[in-house]
Amino acid sequence: MSTRYYTASSLDGFIADPEATLAWLTSRAIDTDGPMGYTELIAGVGAVVMGSTTYEWVVEHEDGRWPYDIPSWVLTHRELPTVEGDVRFSAGPVAQVHAEMTEAAAGGDLWVVGGGDVAGQFADAGLLDEVWVSYAPVALGSGAPLLPRHLELHLLEVARNGDFACARWEVVR
Image (cartoon, rainbow, N blue to C red; front, side):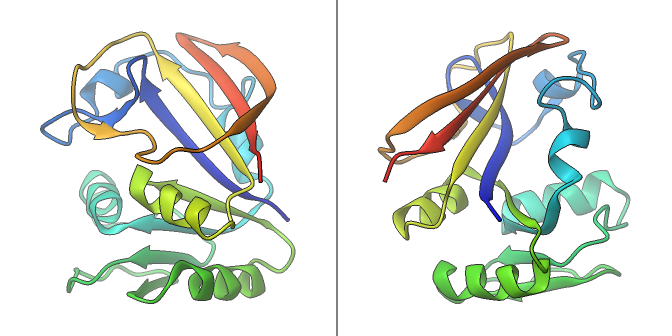
């Protein structure tokens, strides 16, 4: 079982532009079945976690349908709209959420969907094992940072997937 932050980023380290849009990302070619693609990741995932901004984006862009058929956690201190699916809202510490996710995942990996601060909270608690980033060929100049923390990493793998340069690191403890 591994806890992974899997995301896409601009070359200059942003996961969303200043308007919190992803048009710069979704207009790029990527093969979900290709190297370090979504299919490879999701096959082993037993539970996901994200912050409220990511949750709201997913709900909006999936027309209110929840795209995951696995237990999902949303870290928030706000009241958010609910969707049909196994979605659990939590304002508790990430260590508690991680323990709940680990139990629910039944041996599967845990996916930190985003944002960067959520991944940072897991890293701060010593609970993040890997960081997978697919870099898009664009610089945004500002926006939501990939990972707003100091974190030491060891490179495990690199690959090209469509327009993206992909890298996988393990977190150095």
